[in-house]
Image (tube, rainbow, N blue to C red; front, side):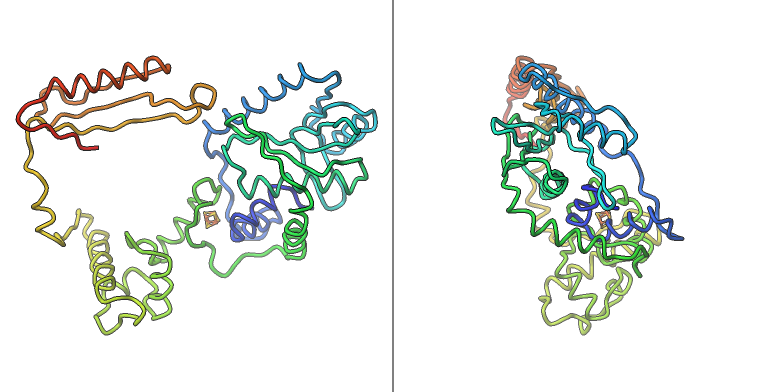
Length: 364
Ligand code: SF4
């Protein structure tokens, strides 16, 4: 049995997919996924879905909501709603011997064909979301319901991304075959290399702990993936090995300057790990010395924003300034609306202008 989320996992990170399958199958030693994630995004995601539901309730004559939690009963209710020609089926459930999934909306077009609509808070169609959508569209077809050629993502910025189902079926089949032909088990190495998908992954801590425990080269600040691969191939697979390496250990494909810098960085971090004291080396004293001398007029400025505020339009809700003379410490300029955002920025500009003297620098 696989779900649309399993396909998205496989697309985002095969390691995650393997770990999740092992955990679900009860494989001994399989790490447990950590629930939680981005609560703010989840909250706004639910609000986006509810807003779509409210809009559709006003637009169509017949909308059926499948709120039954038991998958088998929910699938039966979904089939009944589709058979009745309902305009929109909300939380439609598909269930057969191999697949289980719950689509946000199935909407009937003028020709009586259904198409899948899924709400996503993102402002662009991400691969994982598209493959989930394709899985629902495929389930709709396999169950024999009249279905249209397209599928749709209702995005967080109010736009709709419409895609052709047929364009994604070959990829869907490849992923499905890979997923269903794999036996549950654990990979030899329980963690994997960092990638974009780690940011929202339920195994993020597990993999980070693994990299740390194995002293992986990815711990070295500024290390690129290709450099890490070349160093590991040359037998320098840990931060400790790199820290102790001499110039003769340099792989030919890494320049002497890059190797020296990475080796020095590794050595600093290893020293800091061992002593527990902040460790540093001044690499380029001239560059450091070219920084301007501190001035009483100096302002250190930062802004904080909420991309979900104001119905997804986003808001810069805080402009903050720390002044170098310390007289006022931290000065915040808060905003809770578009009007206040404008005012907060104007107030900050007035604040900075009032400090105008022989030298005024704003560091951001
Ligand atoms: S933390 Fe990153 S590498 Fe580990 S399973 Fe998740 S996405 Fe994959």
